Amino acid sequence: MCADNIYAIILAAGKGKRMGTHTNKQFLCINERPLLYYTVKAFSDNSLISKIIIVCSEDEIEYCEKEIVSKYGFEKVLSIVKGGVERQHSVYNGLIAAEGADIVLIHDGARPFASNTIIEDGIKYAKLYGASTCGVTPKDTIKIRDSEGFSLDTPDRNTLFSVQTPQCFKYNIIMESHSKIQMENINVTDDTMVVERYGHKVWLYQGSYENIKITTPEDLIIAERILAT
Ligand code: CTP
Ligand code: MG
Image (cartoon, rainbow, N blue to C red; front, side, top):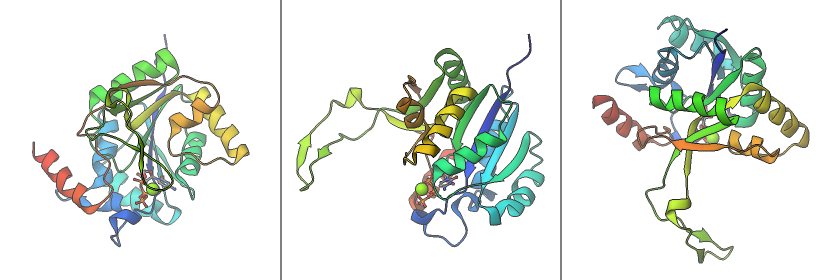
């Protein structure tokens, strides 16, 4: 039996506005290596991943090739493609480049600590159910707020799930759903929403509190601490 083609699409085409630095956040260093290095390494080191597609801003493709892919010898990187204005456009470009994949893992470039267990569980559940994402139970109590700013409701924390990446899919399901949503011109904040819209079920599995997304400057300090453990 042939092994599955399992591709990781790593998204690094955002602007990093909330980080507020001149250098785009995925190229900021944690312990002397760029954030994106750790993210690519996590997938590159996993033996189930066949190929990696990196999605970057057009004007950062050359830099990414030189400072990440060549410098650290990431041979699984098949291509670096340009992103789009919104995250979903970047994903779509990544999906086009991942043609031939059986399973795709879509992952935030700004999320450097995806473990082997998280990657492998995502693949397992995507094969079983067609779509899966990791995440964690929120640590805070979550409120629903009304339009005037008052609390409307307090959902039971045990039913809530704070979604992370990787989000993992059978290629045909995610490609077909993304193509449709492009036509419909609808905005989404993650990829599970895209497949849900067209009736696909998404399995939610355990991620980790260390699988953080680097968004604001204090996240860099947390990342240094995680690396030190
Ligand atoms: N991303 C992308 N293309 C976009 C927007 C986001 O590839 N048009 C990527 C980012 O590079 C990031 C991931 O999606 O790795 C998650 O997005 P987020 O953390 O919001 O990053 P940014 O959009 O770069 O940050 P900000 O929202 O603060 O500008
Ligand atoms: Mg953003």
